[in-house]
Image 1 (cartoon, rainbow, N blue to C red):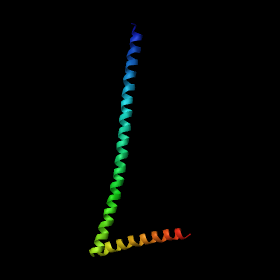
Image 2: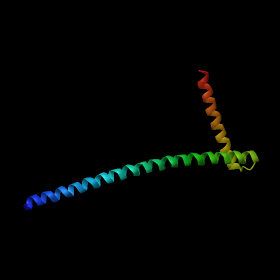
Image 3: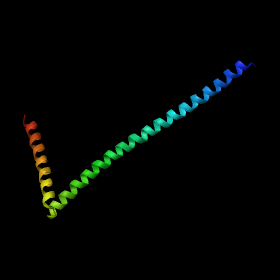
Image 4: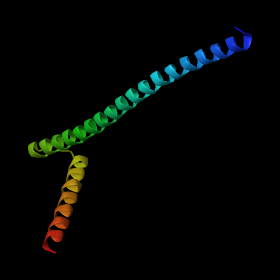
Length: 95
């Protein structure tokens, strides 16, 4: 076999190795993207759960009369926002 043919064969083998490695890396990349997406969804769900729990804690404090002045103002503001949203919905429904 000539030197040229050996060089071509070696280059071809290396190319095949690179292609296989590329496929492996693509699969790994897809798996990692799926993991990232799942973690993002989990993070969003956790954030929503935290917000719900904070709201529940505020309601419980209000029901037991354990709110300080700052918490009372925040609670009243939240209740007023809910009332405005309800009024908007009623307005839309009456149209």
